[in-house]
Length: 125
Image (cartoon, rainbow, N blue to C red):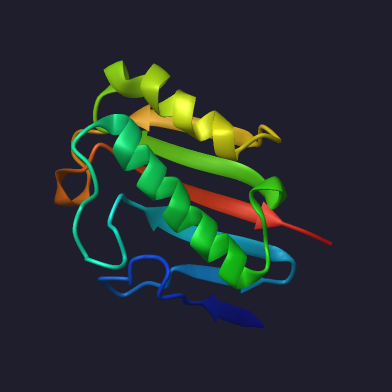
């Protein structure tokens, strides 16, 4: 059975998808961009500010679902510019201290022209 995850502490889904889905012991969280859920606005113009908001949004979904950053087994990170890789990592490493598997790619464009997006898969027994 699938269970939808929804929290007002992360941006609401703006399309035909959920913030996250739990299947068995695994959480599949949709990609998060740097929208401040309190204002609905993009937070920050720099990669570190945007990455910080993304991590807060990811954390809110993990918490709502009963998971932690330590439960994350895989992340997929999307950057608008690979030149931001080091600065993005400086924020990322503060949250993902267990060093889950990861893919990180530069893409042509992200929703709302943000600089980064992160999706996660988390598991606990």
